Length: 479
Image (cartoon, rainbow, N blue to C red; front, side, top):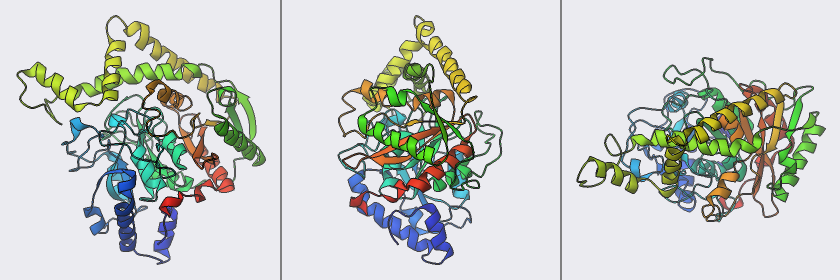
């Protein structure tokens, strides 16, 4: 077997009897053993998953993958890369974990991440950062750092991350992968540890659009145990991947992505080349002004921290997870458990969240953020009356070196400029590769659509991917 096979290639190999399930499991077990010590992509490898073939027949039969460490797997540690949950074993499978296993998938580990998904670089993990296979001095993006790093290095052919502001799409951009943030409610959130409940969604990370659409098809569909799940049946997102753009497709180019000084020159050049490529493929393009986009980061900043403070209030040592040793009373147990268990970034966000929710500041901050969120949603609704899809760079920056962004949290937050608006309005977007920097670092762009337009987004992404084939390039040190 060779490295960097896609899901589709593995399935074809099974069909042609080029290799067996045992061969595949052994191959990936050996790659993880060889390379994970360099990458720190896995927090835990489930050795037992490699010992026995899956008895379930399905679309992912005996194909190994990785779940981010905030997605529950029954009987396994689910720590969200935090010390406070380092001894917590999930009592049930997340709905998406069950759906993947029902299709024969082998989930072979827990993926490293920023603690409680709070971060854009992976450096806020309590267990050290995952590294970018394209250059080990650089971040693979966050907070789904481990899942992205593992797929990019060919340790697994697919993974599942989660996204609240950028955490699937930016890692996809930084690692030359495909990453989807779905319409809010498209995939079940049951069993995914909450950060910002009104934004959080799980999403697949893969090498190709087809593989991504296949995973999305498997995990789509209504979940009666999730109150935010939409009442729609499972959908096959692979059936319309023709390799051609739909006729008369109108694509809006978000004006800020070409005119903002925050977009670094190499990203801008790659994005301009992307626009030309889409035009040559028959797309009609026009520059569009997305009103209120400049408020996206501020809205996200306020709402995400408010909801984080609320969601993380349950971790106090009284019910589950770590508890401080020998507290003198209940108050000291709460305080010391949280002081010892949470990292600095989580503490920072909890403090800010409690501040914006406090009696003297709720109207000034939180309520206004909710109002502006509705205005931004209307801005998208108005634009999609005129165009079918929108495009922009996924991130205005190139991958950053480990240590650069963590010393300037505000600068890290601004890297989410183009991804946050979709999360706070619940509309789908996909990041796909569109080039490389002069030093060989990946660059991605995103395709954005109205709510429940994943099928159209996948069609456009697949057509671009097949024409450009950036996915064929892999990090040389892991070949």
